[in-house]
Amino acid sequence: MNSHKHNTSPISTLSFSSHYKYSLFATSLDLKRQRFTSPLLLIFLFLCLSFATSMAVSDSDSDSGPVVQTTPLVTFLQRVQLTALRSYSKKPDPKFYIDLSLKLPHDLSTAESAFDDLTTGSRDLSVPVEKLEKFVHEYFDDAGKDLVHHEPEDFVSDPTEFLLNVENDQVREWAREVHCLWRTLSCRVSDSVIESPDRHTLLPLPEPVIIPGSRFREVYYWDSYWVIKGLLTSKMFTTAKGLVTNLMSLVETYGYALNGARAYYTNRSQPPLLSSMVYEIYNVTKDEELVRKAIPVLLKEYEFWNSGKHKVVIRDASGNDHILSRYYAMWNMPRPESSVFDQESASGFSSTLEKQRFHRDIATAAESGCDFSTRWMRHPPNFTTMATTSVVPVDLNVFLLKMELDIAFMMEIAGDRKGSERFVKASEARKKAFETVFWNEKAAQWLDYWLSSNGDEPETWKAENQNNNVFASNFAPIWISSFHSGKTMSTCLFAHIY
Ligand SMILES: OC[C@H]1O[C@H](O[C@H]2O[C@H](CO)[C@@H](O)[C@H](O)[C@H]2O)[C@H](O)[C@@H](O)[C@@H]1O
Image 1 (cartoon, helix red, strand yellow):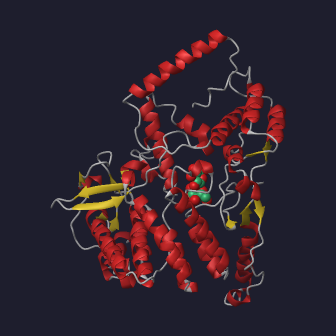
Image 2 (cartoon, rainbow, N blue to C red; image 1 turned 180 degrees about the vertical axis):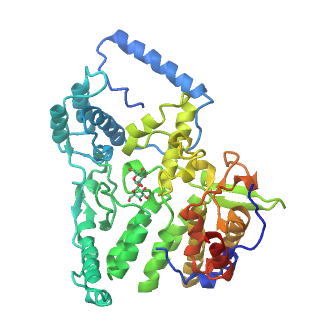
């Protein structure tokens, strides 16, 4: 049992004014499309499908949570991916196949029918590697071809201004090399994506992008925060603003910033750091126009994280309700970019409901940006006990508290005093929730909270639901300087460590 005394945690020292002194820590795929030439077979198939459909509708044991459908191209590429994984003896990266784009003059239906011809007769869907490679080459452009190099206009190869501040020669040379990576990672979405989005899984974006590199050939939401911090150091303000414009366009289109700018990432977001990005840029550039543009977008994003399945209500012993948020992906199938892996991981579950719940918890872990941490496992390190949607995470709520303070700050700049006060109040309410739900005096940490129910209705706080394990995220509140400026925090932490 945790001792959860309602002593004041260091978070209570947080105030709006002190917030702005951050210290940063730093279809089953196996159902291959067959050509049924016999009318009897067609009738048989029709009857089977009708039966399966009626079963699905009456199956009260299937997961009823939200699902954002993906595109027909993604669904098809999952089949190609499965065949590739079954055909090569050394397993390729499944993401490569889901990143392919349809080559002109082919369209989806001609590619599908050529793929049917290729795989017909293969029981396990594997095919000779040479034949697969010929098919992929004929029907698809290489993964990554739909991103073209972009020379950032604000890049200076020898930025003396900040490099001269680095005294050590070796470190300065290393810093120069890191700075030069911007040119390697800078791209823009090709015109072909804008002209024919259905041929690509890459999503169109208005401004040039900075990608993480390696197998990640698209923009990622929370990576962009650190990218922007780096760009600001490199004095690349135009590029930094472009990244924010891209993320804002995703929020405007989808209602939230996607995990990444790919058609298979539309079912989830990532740690919400857009307001922090705008804040960092404003701090350096004092660009009020950016702030004014960002406010309505941030309000939309704020609503996403504080409504529907993302919102949870924890009731304290005095009957006060505390509103917090959790990660919750709008997906209950294998993640397309890793579908074979996810199917294998779920193979031990017998019911559809168990499999769907497991897949949602896996996709939700991806929404957390941390992927497969033992934080999300009911019985670590047993991967099949992933239950991410049942956790109220400390770090997510820190990001949201920061969003509240950032919005309040931005509204103040925009002259909206009332709006600003509303968000200060929202931050104070979340601060109280941190005290009640997360803070643990004995451990001197904020602990993740396990939900007892499905989180749809308010539930009463229980000390034993705090997760006693120590994770770096337990200390996420100290990201905001006033959380650790008080003596209480350092005293408690040192007492715990030594
Ligand atoms: O650096 C990009 C991101 O890389 C990891 O996650 C991404 O890859 C996962 C597996 O392909 C995918 O399921 C997830 O949705 C992607 O975001 C990393 O965990 C992320 O933190 C990081 O943003």
